[in-house]
Amino acid sequence: MTDSIEIHKLSEIKGKNPTVIVGFPGTGLVGSVAASQLIDVLGLDFVGYITSATFAPLAAIHNYKPLPPARIHYSSKYNLVVILSEMSIPINSSMELAQKLFEFSKSLNAGLIISLGGISLKEEENAVYVVSSDQKIVKNIINKKLAKPIREGATTGVTGILLSQGVLESFPVLSILAEASQDYLDPHAAGNALKVLSNFLGLQINTDSLEKDAKELAETIREVAIKSKTPKKTSAVSGEGGTMYG
Image (cartoon, rainbow, N blue to C red; front, side):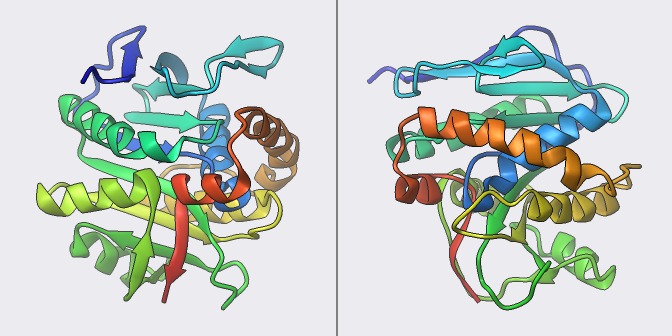
């Protein structure tokens, strides 16, 4: 069987042990919105895109420019690779996509994969949670009081597969999950996820204006996700975030 997902590079990524950040649709669209904001704030370059016969035939439009909805951005200054999708990923493609992203990250000699997403535990407003294939990372984050650990539960979609693969291959994969609404897009939660990310990586990101700027961006991403014609329940499962955590 021929692989249906392909990663296309428009230019080389030459950083040493870059951090790879993944943001896909899911609860509150947190992953996609946070990743898009990171790209805009840090000025990351568009260096590649992802295609599949299973993906919806559409283009995302930003600042008058049409772009592939699943794409790759890079900054040599920050040594960051950001992979985002503004469209819902079909459930049947999640396994292959996660494997392709994992192999792509290893080909870059990445030092860490970080997935951004939303979660709806409804236990504490503005809470951010973390889970990782490397417990040293979790301990570091908890010691700095940046987020809370997840002791029991399950995660789904691309993030779940990346975490499992990270355990199997002793590769550091971290998931940052911000408390978000299941019923509507949540740019505030995306800002909370970015605050934890920026503190963890030591990035100088002014998050004060992010929530305001994210509202228009979130509406655009929601429109792309809707046009990808994936039912809401499917999107929550195949996207990034958790449905069962404790």
